[in-house]
Image (cartoon, rainbow, N blue to C red; front, side, top):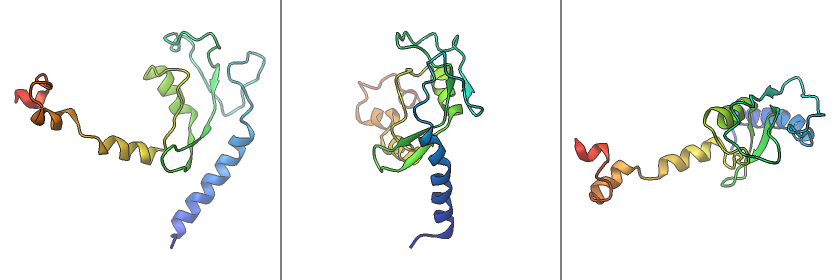
Length: 132
């Protein structure tokens, strides 16, 4: 049984995703394209770490991502894309492939190096837990 809050969240996600899907053909690397009003401008100086012959984006748009694990559609906001590519220095050809919930689950399901250091002390001798 689905709660009312869950139904409303799904309806909102569908309403938000529909215009984004319709806008998919816009190429942010094309100098002839006028950025939409909700586009986030890219800082090309921050994208200099990407040696890309295909061109660097001039702006970011919200994009719909289908999760590789659960199949749920989620919006990858332009602001997060800007952070990923310009601040975290992510590869410009990389895109999100998992929803936030699956990324969180995957991140916390892996054992950390500190846990492994107790099982393999020679391999993880530089680990902070081994020095304490």
